Structures are given as structure tokens and as C-alpha cells.
Length: 147
Ligand SMILES: CC(C)(COP(=O)(O)OP(=O)(O)OC[C@H]1O[C@@H](n2cnc3c(N)ncnc32)[C@H](O)[C@@H]1OP(=O)(O)O)[C@@H](O)C(=O)NCCC(=O)NCCS
Image (cartoon, rainbow, N blue to C red; front, side, top):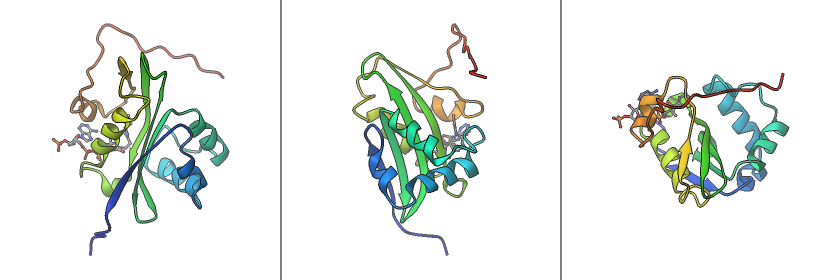
């Protein structure tokens, strides 16, 4: 029988301390990213804590004690913001949860007045198009790797 427990979507402020301080919170985030993302695998709990401390908005989604969705953003609060690490547990994809997570991020205090919000995606542009994002034909994504 399907799990009928309610799904919650929580908007955290900078640092997402409620997520960090709950029992095994960072472990659950680590597992979600390891299992359901391809770019954020292998991050240590210490690194994830630092990542959250450097994020001005964080959204987590829960079913009971299970972390089933996540997204975060960096932002100057006024001019520019970037979404990062939007992930939904594969057992919950296709049910509108990713949309709820992105909409909650965009309404977070650190993002709601920002002039431009950017993101990078490999194969989910159709998902973000439905949320008001457009491909930038006239700009190039450039990358400098630290090693
Ligand atoms: C991409 C992701 C976050 C979407 O979350 P989700 O909960 O499955 O998406 P939703 O159910 O909210 O979908 C909203 C709409 O976007 C569409 N959509 C979802 N994923 C899509 C994709 N990859 N490409 C095109 N459209 C997509 C859905 O069909 C739905 O359209 P509808 O309203 O017409 O039915 C989720 O599939 C995921 O975590 N994927 C693995 C990690 C990943 O690639 N994240 C993106 C990082 S940039």
C-alpha cells in the first residue's frame, strides 16, 4: 500500500539550521544527493554543512522522518540569485514536488525581490521552462575549475 503520510515543504533561512541540527539531518541530505543526483554525490557531511551555511535560502521536503526533496539558492537579495541542487527522491518524482520546491525557493525572502535568478541544468530544462525560466541564447556559461 502506498505511503499516505503527508508531505511537507519547509523553507529555511541561511544555514538551514533546523535541517542541520535535527538527528541525522546531514546524513539524510547526503543520502538524498548520493542516490538521486548525479553531480552532488560523495559530498561529506562537513562539506554539506558548509554548503548550507553559504546558502541564503534552502528548501527541504519531508514525508514523516524521510527527506524526499531538497533545493537551495545563493543570493545577494537584490540583483542576482542562483538555484542549486534541486533534487526529488525518484519515488516521489512526477507528482509536483519539484515544482513546489522551486516555487518555495523563489518566494523565500532572499529571492523574492531579486532582479534575475539563474540556474544550470543538464537535462531538466523542460521542468524549469514550466516555472518561468528561459534559455539564454545570448550568454555563455563559463567555468573555472579549482583543480
Ligand atoms: C528534475 C526534478 C527536480 C523534477 O522534480 P519532479 O518532482 O519530478 O517534477 P514535478 O512533478 O514537479 O514536474 C513539474 C512539471 O515538470 C515536468 N518535468 C519534470 N521533470 C522534467 C524534465 N527532466 N524534463 C522536462 N520536464 C520535466 C513534469 O512533467 C511536470 O509537468 P506537468 O505539470 O505538465 O505534468 C526531479 O525529476 C529530479 O530530482 N531529478 C533528478 C535530479 C535532477 O536532475 N535535478 C535537476 C537539477 S538541475
